[in-house]
Length: 501
Ligand code: MLC
Ligand code: AMP
Image (tube, rainbow, N blue to C red):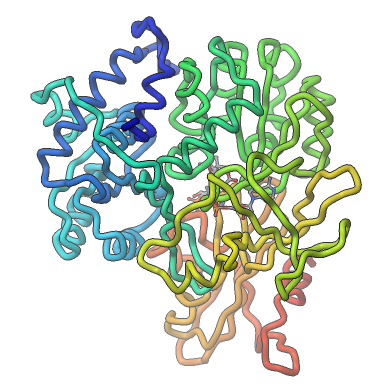
């Protein structure tokens, strides 16, 4: 039987010369493909001897290092299910993920180890390892005594490779279960559509705990044995300095807005580039056009989500249209109305998708899974789209109440539920407002109950204490009452207009 382990697919595509560079850091340090093979072997041995069986989850909340990427590969290799967590999540948020996913192993930064160890004990985690921002910690020191030899664990295509938590409209995060085949098919599709080749060099500045930085970017590089110039985070100066050594760059729209704000960024910076892609949030037409004027390159915008990887893309060869997310990739798509009936061409509806990239369901939420799939297998994305006459798709809105800030999803319901618990708050409503840097900014409206005095500062501090920093409202308005319609429903459009004014 063939091994459908995604790692085997990657390894098959690593260069024959294993001394070739797989990762290069800004300070010049490099990791060869042999280093990747060796450390992933050691880590796979360590994980296996730490009480984790294939199918068990490994929760990981660590800074962006090559060692963290190799940990991901080691999890694949040993049949464990990788569960990455945004480093911005606070202890209370991590508590939920650990309780829900019940991982066997937790890998965290040494700075948060004390707090997370308490959670780990409570939720039945067997082993806690540390990994710091320099790629050091108990994970690496303990792996050192293990063999580099490891026979990659046999996996069926339908076995889980990763769980990515996505926030829910009800405020409760859902773990999207992605299989080895889901990830392999999307990676192969993107590599083909975006014409990846062996001599590509990927400049990587995205975080590695979401689909964009972890799967879209890295999987294309693994499938082509490419060198990755690996930056620990996005910094416009550093990206500008490193772009001349790269051929491919992927970013959220904020990256492009910030690059355009950098005076030294221009045609010369991009002289060796062949592809810039954007996604995770809408790319403004102004940004798209200004980028072309400044560099001579046309950004390729694509659209996707945690549950399915990439769904549509502007063409590599062919016209890339501003404001459009292009054409369907290797998945079936249809646009339907509220009753699930396919709309006429040109009409707006909700996008539904079906294909090998579409996830298996939400972790331990069979009812939620059933509610979001049609009986004929199509998944309801919740994104409102229109198909133009030329066959290109446009995202025109969302049926889900979601704010996307700098490429991170924020569900108003989660923040509202939290704010409603704050002493002095009677009720709250959270909306998004256009923001020049982050695309959208989180704005909160509060009605006081009069019991204690609260103001913008105390409300912001309250959120900052418990929720990830990108969820903290950039502005707070205190109102006497929330605008409601005759049915008593809060009029969020009115609040958006108030916030914009
Ligand atoms: C940081 N802050 C944010 C923020 N990121 N606030 C709102 N939205 C964000 N995205 C906060 C900081 O905590 C700080 O607050 C203040 O804003 C300014 O910080 P900064 O120094 O400017 O932020 P920076 O560290 O530079 O981060 C900005 C960023 C980062 C854009 C580089 O957010 C980022 O890397 N975003 C990429 C997200 C991503 O990969 N998404 C893909 C999801 S996958 P304070 O109070 O501390 O000063 C997906 C599917 C698909 O969606 O299709 O790809
Ligand atoms: P996530 O759940 O973090 O994977 O985010 C997925 C969501 O991001 C999608 O459902 C879309 O709403 C949004 N998204 C991704 N790419 C784009 C894009 N190019 N344009 C507009 N929205 C996008």
